[in-house]
Length: 130
Image 1 (tube, one colour):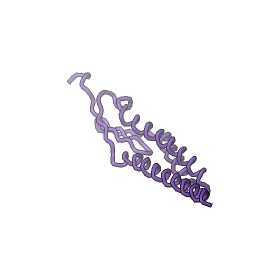
Image 2: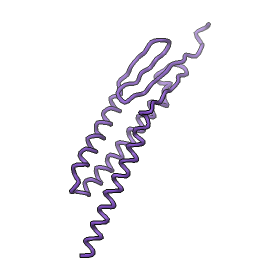
Image 3: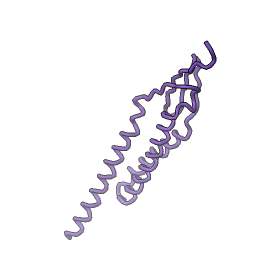
């Protein structure tokens, strides 16, 4: 065959590394931006839990966590769908079930924010009754 045949490869994007398999050889690249975003999100969520007496700060931290979450989604899916940057020619992209984790984080972050907001409304309505 000639050198113009398209190369096929498998690329698996994880949270800490990207594994690129092509013609029997495997290469790994670190995803430091993705890993650092996840660590910042986890720290922000943990701090948000311990601010249970200060609902205003909980809502601010949950909003900041939304921003980091959208950044993570952008980073993760740009790594996954712009895969021709990593593999010469046409490559096959494999999204693992772990790639749905940010969507569940988005859901639970939204539910937490909504819960804090409803608590704040309840406290304000009770204060008006006094």
